[in-house]
Length: 361
Image (cartoon, rainbow, N blue to C red; front, side):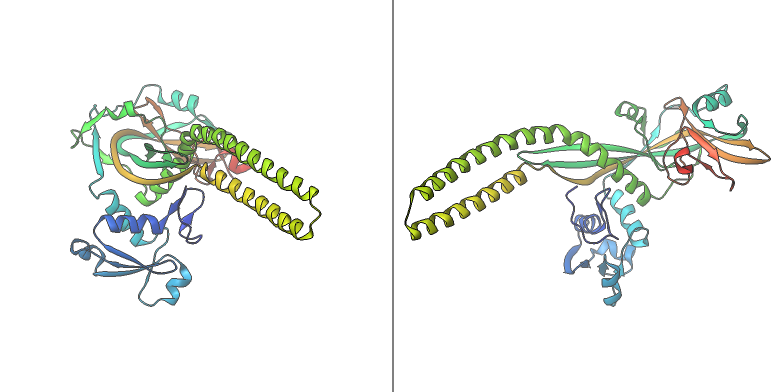
């Protein structure tokens, strides 16, 4: 990702997420006047409609902890701060957020659900799971649509959707464009209680991390083409300078004039430096850089069947809640509470947690 790095607290090098870029971009789009006021510091004059939201007309935003401490009246912005949550909510609702609702019927608890669960998920060292309760609740699958600009020897653009399960805070790659055609209602025609949904700021970070993988996949053909063109041009550069250097060395060997030899040695050194500079410039020209920004968000509301399991391990019982997704017609894999990754195997610990095998190593 080609994002500016301010400091470790506001820039996630794994996901490319930059708080200063994200917040200042939104504020500019919303009509605010944003001016840099120093390292990691921005002065903001808010438009009239945002004054009631933030409680004042002017903001002084600090994206560095030390800068915030040294700047009276500034607001320190970091992951988890209330101001970030407010901006995420406003940005996602700034004319680019759509809520669509499931156009099918409310799902019923499928038959042989315990057998389906046992076939889908292994609860190691536990007796077969027993269903304690099941109910229908409305989950939200967020579609984060990112506009990506790929820059190299040519410029291309693409909109890449990233689907995130709002309840599990996990990527939902099975939520395809074909599935979108089943969400046709702007108002629900069913009644279902809402499922617990993770904060949008957290889901956005998950989407950014998943976006990095998708961008790499999409950039690969462009990188391969750029590499071929780069090697072709580098071969021409090396050939040209090899001939030039050979001519200078030939003149240097044939000359007995000390002054001329000194000039030729200077010319040779300058040629070698010029070659290194041309090679560096050529490699830079064929590097693939990617700029990404959130273009719009679609919240797909889907009633799901939630299932609470009772699991017996030795002499104590454990509880685990699973989600049956009617869109896929299958059980969603649960997230490991320690690493957050989806797992088809959970193992009880002495502390009474169910963790994936990787977290027990």
